[in-house]
View 1: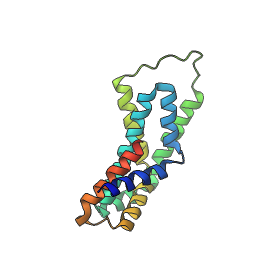
View 2: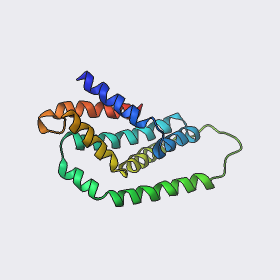
View 3: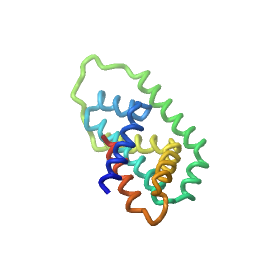
View 4: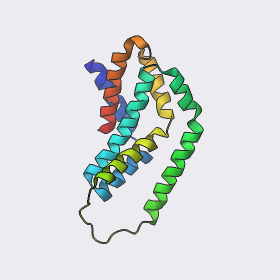
Length: 160
């Protein structure tokens, strides 16, 4: 079990190493809004990874097929959201004085949920999990505990 957890953790760290749009969003939020907001944003992405990993590990092929069938719509939605965030960042006026960020409960929840939903707009993630889990023989109902252990490692690696 520990081997599967570590395997999942390392798998996610390797996948997350090249910083993509979600990673850049987390970095930006860390710089502008503080470490806690950046961390909470990262947890939103980790939760989405865990959700997709769980779908793949539990062998929910029907759900996988539905999500993959909606990939164009999900990608379009995610692309529009990323463009909107990018334009907002580009047009924002930088502050001359760096103030201590004020963190509100709504701000943390918004950071978590927005990153969670943006990460969900990448249905290729579920395809990656499905291929990896199938290669490890974890896509069957009999190995759900092993699959969920691997998912826990992936979620922890994503959070790191």
